[in-house]
Length: 263
Image (tube, rainbow, N blue to C red; front, side, top):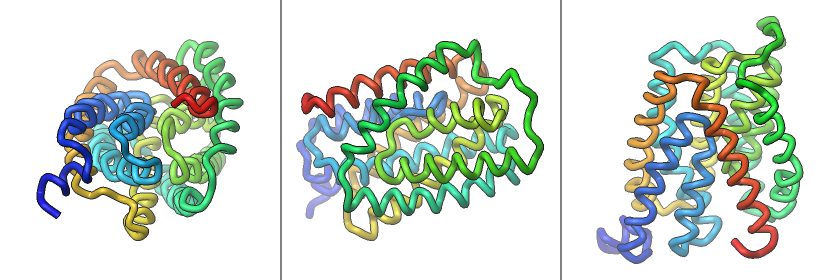
């Protein structure tokens, strides 16, 4: 295999001019409110990559970008390490289960489930003035237990399919676990990085990752995450809610089109 084929994963060279800008945009969106996979997965699919290779290669590029955003949030003190550490372990277990399921199972059932659930998610975002809970925070033990349960459940989904993982984590950590939006974003990135890397290892062991293409796309995803993390740090929750709402709407439309056999 020559260098060009390694970089493009066997796709035509022009596909890099589609994938790379979209992976930058995906990283930017993902760092702010999650849901970058709603942009990155269609980018790979649009260029003719099969579904399993798309999901697997996207794990490489998204892991690279998420690692940068996680590092920046950690430096700003957004990650409560004790809670995040316990949640990360559960996310790792969930992602391992989900990634193995994705290798053997159909996506249709999960897509139908998500399409039913998404109107409730969108309604919640519209109804809430901001993502911060208006109820008092739980005690440490209950907060940790809820974060662990959320991490495992969303981890299964992320390993299996992936798009919208960060959005769902943000919504659940703010609304259910009652974390403030900055801590929720920090825990979200720690969990999401873990689930991405865990799933990536499973896919690598099964030979499903186009490494060259994933690395090139990952560089652009890193740049997008860097810019997005800066925007979030400067403007905080003011920009999270509209980004999440747009992501949920796009995800709903995309799922409906997929189920109808159009996309």
